[in-house]
Image (cartoon, rainbow, N blue to C red):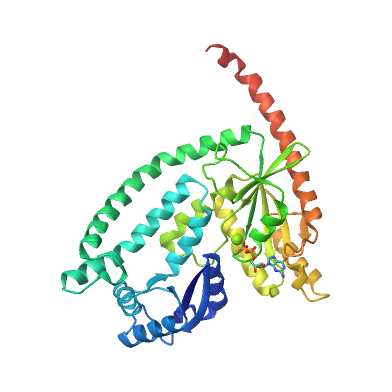
Length: 379
Ligand SMILES: Nc1nc2c(ncn2[C@@H]2O[C@H](COP(=O)(O)OP(=O)(O)O)[C@@H](O)[C@H]2O)c(=O)[nH]1
Ligand SMILES: [Mg+2]
């Protein structure tokens, strides 16, 4: 984990815990936090110096600016600190990149990154033309100039590639379905416990090879239950207020959930009821937009080890009420991924659904085979 100084902009002052969660999910250890006293996208020279000093004192390797900054402020802060500055968008994109399962998602993320970085790199070029030394982070003027050229042509190329890739996703999906796997995607908010649950469920399992997925990702693992192959997928967390310029990248990263047969929706029930409801609401609307709301869904109420005695039933009732109004009845399992509690109850639900789906799809495939036989014999 790289050490980061977290600077939270005034606009996000109420989101400190979310900022820390996002930084952690992107694999940063937050060594110090600065709350910005004033709103706006600009940093004064004095502010840059202060942030740079705190970064140095804390031994930070990176500065995360949780908010928006003008390119010239990023430039000046990088110059003052001699450290890479990544803003909220870049941090979230790093999380997406860890989870991008498909070629499309990878391309969307790369394009969002390039578009976001372009004005910053242009700022380096502009400053160097004004005679400034711009090599404090390594590359000098000419490297930045050729980087701008590379970035613009790469963006154009990705646009073309994306058009073709969409078709491939569909055919790959069909092939995978024929392989007989049942896919269970683990979804939920950042820090709900998705990865913990994934690890718990797949402790003894094997990663799924590239012949079935476009990725070699460790986020897919297959478990065999009496001949029934279930592939668990650890997906990228839901994020509140996804910046518009990365919405496409977000949805294509989450596409795994849309392609899954079963959705395991993890909820951190140790949070306040209001927070639980707010996050559930946001999660459900994300699934709706993905077209994944009609999937077989199991709700995992996680972190029950942290829930004060006697309050679990109220929390559960609040969740169930919201579910009835949206996805309808869905099985709810109370568990602790950390302690391994109720793993068997969750598995029972997942395997039950998987068996049902397998037998349904086997009879469907047999039906199809009969229908296509005359065509196949034409050669
Ligand atoms: N007490 C407790 N902590 C948990 C539980 N499940 C996950 N955590 C913790 O919650 C944090 C986030 O978990 P993680 O699996 O990384 O969440 P993800 O962001 O959804 O993948 C970690 O510090 C976990 O150790 C649980 O059942 N009980
Ligand atoms: Mg995770």
